[in-house]
Length: 446
Image 1 (cartoon, rainbow, N blue to C red):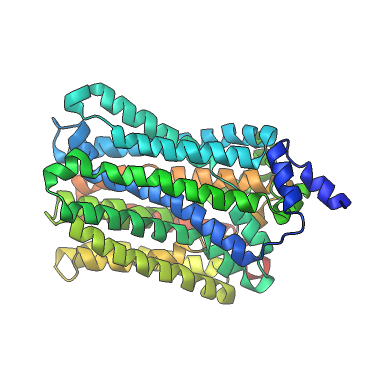
Image 2 (cartoon, rainbow, N blue to C red; image 1 turned 180 degrees about the horizontal axis):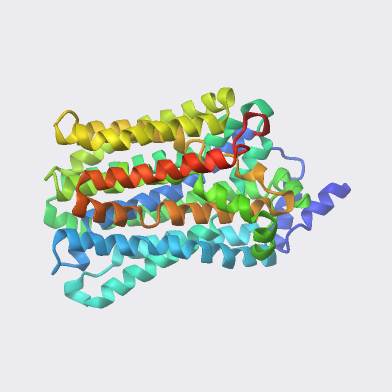
């Protein structure tokens, strides 16, 4: 065995990982193989995410807050929704300690089973009528555990993909992990649409919705094995050797790369704002205000997710020609204009909910596809893994954690104009950060 193999074989204290890397010492993974593992992993995470999102609109307000109005019950449900984003940075800290002590494979296994287990446990959630306030506490606990697991599920594979991408295809490979979002939403929305359209409303509320949470556990198991296979490869070991993907201490990372973490978290603000407005908030609007059929609307959103996937793919081509910074700036400008015009067009019946959602998903694909693509290359080598994880946690907390709650509150107080103002603020933040940090996503440094 050569010296390099000896080095990466000892990069982790996990005996199982050392054996796996010895076994795969001569195996190689091209970027295409890495991309497949990344897509599978991200799709499973987003499936869990959207199953909860949909249930937070259609199930939990009635199940847990039957004495409240539909609006107030949904706002309580969205408050619980935010717990996972608060817990996610905590999960990153805890599981990075596990990573340093026992290896990436052990960390991923625990995190993925925790994610699948906490999601599946929600399928057994009792109603308020049968368990009282205990039912609410249980959902809060399960949601917090989901957030801890999402922090631990950060595997560095997106960074591995970026680092193995050809120099002239950085934008293309940066968009690949983002495909997990529309794919996960397609699966979740299709499953819920089927349940809503085939079951009586009483049966759906009694037991139908629970099936989606059982499915999540099976999907997570498949995703776990796909990701562990890549973690045990020679490329991953070599990058651990060079400190490219090794967990560093959070304090040291923030000391040397704090500015990059903050700016990287603020860049995708408009993406995450639009992300929630066309998914969970749009469903809420149709269900609470437009008296629409949620099952039919979920099918419309599924079509929108297809458009989003095509938009993400297109963003890879465009970014490699124009650079990510320019693409993000153009996308934010389009969203800014849409935030101003959409409430007016809807008020005068020029467009409807379906048109808004389809258009929103298409634009979302362009900006979301590149919003997180440059993180790995912006950090110093030894802080790349931890810095990317912290940036992702902070971006989701600031841009996504409270988005449905804020949007619904503004809608109740000011109508759709308030929602447009919220989206407008996200576009302004993104444009200001891009202007402030002109090196972000520059074509020459991608």
